[in-house]
Image (tube, rainbow, N blue to C red):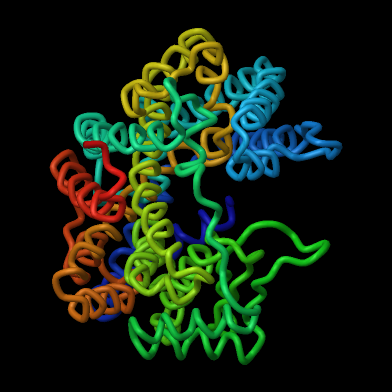
Length: 488
């Protein structure tokens, strides 16, 4: 860390480096990042940052160690959550929900103490760098040059005023489908209990072929990229015994080829994962011939737009994956409703994190009350938590970002709003939307975020009015998808 700081200082001190600006695309942005890193660097923060990382690892170890017993098997909380989302029997869902949350609650003190240490450390890091609070420091360290805390709070207002209303309407539909007088938190994990989970058709080879065919319908180059990866062993897509969990796209910088890793098992979620990761891979291919590595160090706000945008550009052809074509409507519904849910959750996590560092000396009681107030601001009131109040008040303990990557979540909301703008544009002029998407990704990080979004035919704005517009658009599309089931 200190060595990099000295190298950055040395490079920035060279008089000739200014002459490169205007000659090399994106180098002005690179210089700004280096200047910011040098500005906020403090030698005394090195051990504090190392300690912060260790505490983050402590959180992962604690969460990873938590298990429950379910039907004769020991399950991690991640595995248990998956069972919860698939369990059709309401009484069993309740049992699972209770077991998961009781396990977390049994470590309530541990999570609080861990976050206490992290907040104190982070506040000290900020003070050492001459910032009033950690938010100001982190904004700089994350290189957020194109938006401010005020913009985040404008996004929060939009979610609270407009999106929450649409999500409440959707939860009302879920309640009708369940046929229950009271909608409980373990009910909303299953949107339609009368339907089984959509299954994919064909073999593993078919899955790859259909992925390539669907990408070809977006743009021939996109199909070519993934076809090349398939032919040369850069895809590891299917679950097998002993394989690590998860899914991601890994860029192999030395050879300029991406690698996609996932655990497909024949479920609808496999479609979203492969298309999402293909978006990242395509972003890599479109920029692989750029001369300098800094031109390919994409900010998350555009990197996730690449992956989320691909989901919406391909969604109209997802039926090609499905064994039963009647499941297509379910796939679209889950995608659109999932966007509303995710934006609501992003606002909740982001607003809570801002509160934590605006009020670094708060008590445990104040922390839990702040979380509860934040949840109530953004989440539908229709869900009844009677009897589960403690579970609701401590739900933040299960959010990795709060502990390991602080203030790092709004990026997903920005990119998702961008992807939904792209989707809206594609319904008017599909080819033009695809060309804008391709043009923006081809620029790498040689333009500012507003300029990249403009190249895609979008506005880099995620405030109240944009949330209102996108919420109404998504709700209209969602309503069309489930029209016959809407309440009279």
